Amino acid sequence: MTDTAVAAEDRTRTPERARRRRGGGPPGEPRAVGWLYVLPALLVYAAFLLYPLLRAVQISLYDWNGNTLATWAGLDNYADVVTDPALRASFGHALVLIAFYALLPLLVGLVLTAILSRAQVRGLGFFRTVVFLPQVVAMVVIAVAWRRMYSPDGSVNDLLRAIGLDGLTRGWLGDYTAALPAVGLVGTWFEIGLVTVLLLAGTGKIPTELYEAARLDGAGPVREFVTVTLPALRGEISVALTLTVIAALRTFDLVYVTTRGGPGTSTSVPSYEVYNRAFQQGRVGSAAAIAVVLTLVIFAISFGITRIAERDR
Amino acid sequence: MRVSRGERTANYVVLVAFAVFALWPVLTVLLAALGPDDAAGGSVGGGVLGLHPENFVTAWDQGRFGSYLRTSVLVSGTVVVVSVVLSLLSGYALGTMRFRGSTALFYLFLVGIMMPSEAVLVPLYYDLRDLGLTDTVWALLLPQIAQSVAFGTFWMRAWFRSSSRSIVEAARLDGASTWRILWQVLVPLARPAVVTLTVLTFMWTWNEFLVPLVMVVSESLRTAPLGLAFFQGQYTQGFTLLAAGACIVATPVVVLYLFLQRHFIAGMLEGAVRE
Image 1 (cartoon, rainbow over the protein chains, first blue to last red):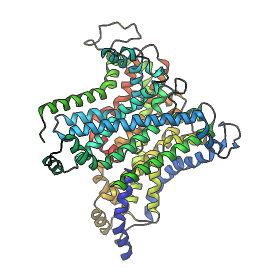
Image 2 (cartoon, each protein chain N blue to C red):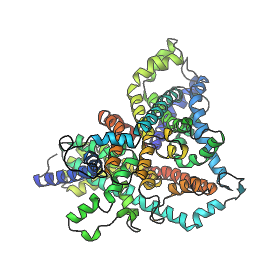
Image 3 (cartoon, rainbow over the protein chains, first blue to last red):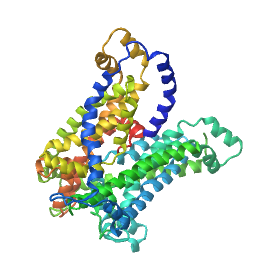
């Protein structure tokens, strides 16, 4: 979305530039006063967001426990991100979460979109309200609910027993192999609504004639979806991927409330490591380095995914 | 478009299945909150029509949600009012005026939208601690205002750019000051965009967890989600009161969503990079 805005910016720039050449804009056009209007917002923003970001970079170059004098560490904290097995594992877990937060919801969203774009369905408004609901509920509340559902006597196990899969029942969040996918599935549940509603908004813009033409050519539902719907949704898909991948990388509340990174370190993720090291273990420099790396990865993904979508178009 | 009856039935089955999946955790919490208190012996029966709304009162007292909600209302209200006003001012300038550096400023604000708060909270905590501001309401307000202003500037700028330029130019030719054009001409027209920005900022601030977790220790400064997390840690005997607490925390935003759904969906689809 930010990138859509950038693209729009590029489009509008040309006439603006032409006008400026003709004589500096229309009469009465205010100029320097613009700074006065931006100033209050800029001051708060610079003091509490930009300056701390620079400080994070600075702190990441030191060994510091938060209290005593810091000692210069150079790039050691960054080297740790690559070499420390615990940190490598946490980034690996983030990759697993990306599959659950981004790929799975996209798949489900595409199926639901295929269904809803083919047939007039009654109750679409209600369906949209319901699937989007998770997006507005505080993550702490969601985590409390799922913790209960995953507990040994929770409804997930009830469901498994009801369909005869008694062998699979367990305390999901306390299980070394099951905990991470279990946390990931909460992400899937959370993002399906966002992705589906986003894709549905995109299909509304596809002209019906395209579908009629496809049907006249004898295309079945699958070919129709692949040749008409999918290409038209490329922009929405890239936006959905950007949002959900970033959400996966930023997972914190959910892990903090459900597992605290456990059992062992089987669900620790980069954001949780940042918190843990900065405020529990007194390894502030290392925490800052992870935070900086995480920020860079998020920036790269935001630009990268949109770039790919733009090139394909 | 017409499809066969079999396909239509299959479609409804799939849609209903996903709607049920989406509501599953919500209903789990709601039903548990209204059921008999499982920590107090779980006496079945009694209550109003078999329901136990008194659980909310018990949870409210035991979990001290009154205090948490008061902090949340104070923090969310202040963040919303301050950041919306500041965003109107900066978005107005970046959207309707041309001045040296305006493009650079826009990109600067864009960085803030993508920035994860984890990155800035580490240095921010230690710097605010040195200033003696941690564990005060300022530590909750200032970082969240800064985050909201980044998105708000981006959001309002987009609206001001697309709003009718001719109105602004006509007002300028009439000799109206930039200040009057903003408040008397544009803001009344911008109401839908301002409402969207208000509900999104409110939701993000109300639901925020990491900032209060890091910044405050005092119980009186805990926001609703943070209070719920602490309540979960203390109250381990059962689930009923925890579920009731979860309902209390989620209700304000959910009710707002049910009334202003369009604003939530439009806003998050067009500009939800922050969360």
